[in-house]
Image (cartoon, rainbow, N blue to C red; front, side):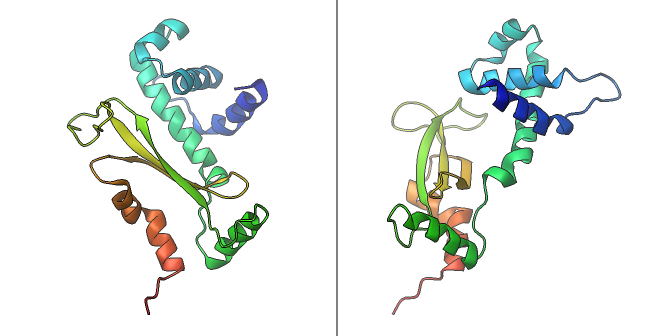
Length: 180
C-alpha cells in the first residue's frame, strides 16, 4: 500500500475510532498499520505482537474494530448494487463499450482459505483438503464492485449458493423470468 492510500484510509476511517472512559485508544495510524499488515501478510496475532510490541489480546480487538470501520466507511463508495431497472440499464450501457451487450455484470466465485470456525465441522472443508469460505462478487465494466458476498460455507454447491444469494433474488425481482 502506498503512502497516499494509507493517508486517505487514515483520514476516512479516523473519525470512526474513539477513546473510551477507561483508556485512551492507540493512535489510529498504529491501529491501521497493524490491521493492514494482518490483512496483507496473514500473520498470526502472536507474530504481530512482536512486530508492533502490542499484546495479542489487544490486537485481537483492534483488527476487527478497524476492519468494521473500514467496511462502514467504504461500503457505499465501493459496492453499489443496482436496485432499479434504470440503474441496471446504466450498467448495461457501460458494458457496451467492451462489446458485451445486455450484460448487467461480470461475476465469479472463489474459495478463500480459512481456519475452521468453532463447531464448523465439515461444512467448511473441501475436497482440496483445506477449510474455506466462498467469496462471490459482481463487477461492472469499470471494475467497480456491484455486489460482494463472503462467508458462505461450502457444504452447498455453488449453484445453490447462487440461488440463495441476495443478488439472485434482486435480479429476478427486477427482471422476472416468464415462461411461455
